[in-house]
Length: 115
Length: 115
Image 1 (cartoon, rainbow over the protein chains, first blue to last red):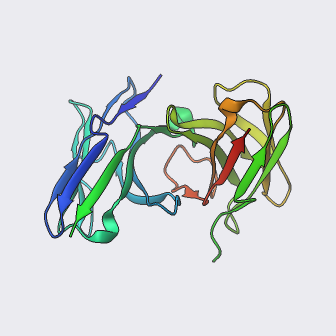
Image 2: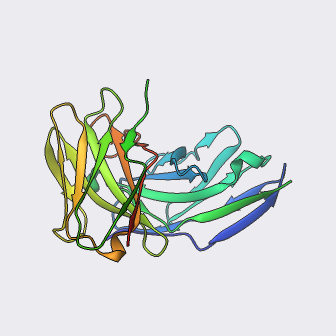
């Protein structure tokens, strides 16, 4: 079964600074999708960024970017110019054609932004 | 366009009781997935429905069941509640099961407390 590991239960960053959240995954599949979701205290999960495994180019969405290392099975999230509103739980997730819409989630990283 | 709605938002039950949670997907979305979120186990997949048919099921006991109606609204039911069923139950909707490409949109969740 696919597993997703987030080794940093908690991280903190100064406002306006950059922080990187780590994620590794284990799979034998070659075609899959990776996601970062944000869950603020309001609990609503929000998609931050998505990466297709077949694309070598790292995905970017404004201040959010990923470092996708397929061979190393690593998928880290970089948040630039951190803002107070970035404070939340961040979940790394995996999906593949073989699993349909089923996500495999990591255990999450709680990000604190220090003013 | 309205987002995914879940009712009720909070629920308190006692052991042995039964509970039904409801999820209304985004208009036009026909696929609904359910997840259980607990501090100890993280986010775990319960099941997925599309066109009133269960397409995928996670590793949960038979006390957990669900269904989907012709208007794509979904319900999940937990019978004979146990203390360990206390969790945040999240529903996610997407256009269709499509090999993982389509984005899933999450609802705010139902917080179930079993006493």
